[in-house]
Image (tube, rainbow, N blue to C red):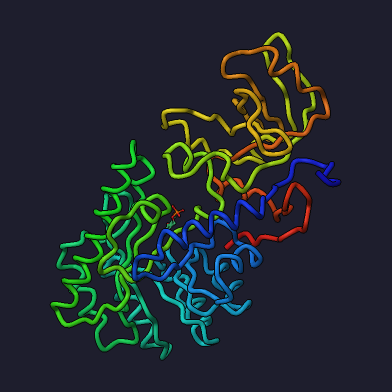
Length: 374
Ligand SMILES: Cc1ncc(COP(=O)(O)O)c(C=O)c1O
């Protein structure tokens, strides 16, 4: 490991990243779908570039800030995957005027009416995907609801074109088995294909049929009728994905480099300089079969150390303990020892940092900045 002495900092293993991207591309290759990766996971030009083989998109973003940033770097086909709010219409219109093929998402008549009025008043043209609720996870229109056609009819002839439907199988993250994930993938596909069918029957072309989450993208057995897959966390993977059986712990590409700053031997604690500011507060594995606390502790080469996890996180302090209260495991880590902590949720942990210290074959090969904010 090169000179990375001041911690905590975010590491990105470039070979694991490339391997994860290749796995997604190979998995989707037999299907007639486009990968529209969600770049909210990385928020970084260098990582996003590696998601494509020379192409500039298409991409999914979670903020208009990301849309703006990636558009400035040459990505034009951008889906803003969070329901649009009226206070963002003007920002979206600006991006469209500059030449972005920006697609917005909405799931209700109220937003549709407001967007149609805005488009008319400003003489702008918008493209939207109607959000479909495939599993009760959060927003969206039920796949068999007449509301889909009502919204499309309301927008007909306005400056807002309905280009398709999209859904996100968020409940797949609660799967207990591979067959659960496969069932969520079936449900996700059926929801958008049925919703697109309703719209087409009513005379709306509906060219885009968009699904996507990492678990369903990797385990879908049938994508007939789907035109694109959005997945994001697959590029990095994390402990939540490993807990679901979607990846191996050894495939997780991001980790937080931290240093041992002290011990509480009678409690079996090792104290490190990575608290929740560096790791995030995400405890996404708490409801899985194995609760990984705030992260799995690895050595400098990225291999898990005994059964150590971060069990508590203050702002700048992390507390490491052995799952089996093995005193030898914690005594072997003197002050100054550097460790790598694997994250529960890669998107949340990466968001705590300004950029990635990139490693290839255990050597530092660069620093890739991230953007943040809205
Ligand atoms: C709308 C939407 N699409 C796609 C994704 C990507 O899912 P994943 O992070 O499981 O790859 C997300 C993730 O939250 C999402 O909200």
